Length: 256
Figure 1 (cartoon, rainbow, N blue to C red):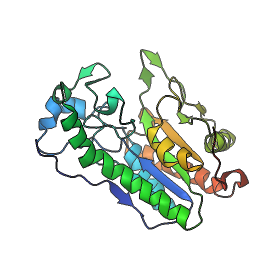
Figure 2: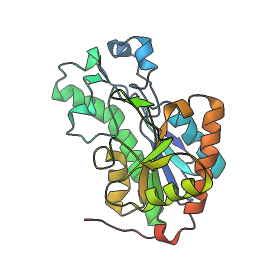
Figure 3: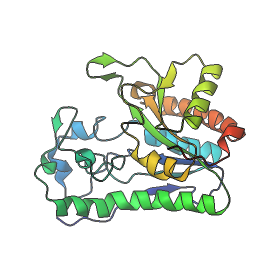
């Protein structure tokens, strides 16, 4: 099967504001030739294919703040940009109990071709954006924008939003503190998984460079229409604006 190169979406790519957004699960797009990965349309519209509301929130924050962003080009079911290259879930054979027919029994060569066509361009764009900021003497705050299902493994998730971090808690704690101060939302470290489990994009383009970084996860029922994504984008933009003046977020720090 030919793999047509799909470029990531770049927003305000020339902006140098001290904020970079990365949305690796932005879209449910499956290129022509994959026959929808053998799935029904209902599955491609579901959370297993992309992070519902995350793209809209990212775009609206960029519009409000003029910050730069990189959006993933294809569905996470085709290849998941937020997974390390060695992970079996890089090209998932199933997601949330749904088998992905086109992902069964793939050869290493086929997976490598998908990686070259869709995964590498996303990460190359993120890497270049970070490098350009650093070369200009900036320490950008790097934020991954995601969303999560209201229930997981049969349990309700009461949090309105959660933050992931691995070893560097600076940006996550700053944003949690500001949101708790300014709202009555239930905010905290993301559960049941954390940045110690799923953090590839932020680790690669944030933590590995000593940059303040975190992944924001918003509950999907809170960002499932235009009005809701507008409200959340405004809220997060206000918080990020305050983070720009935080003295604890202007230095590069490496955590062993």
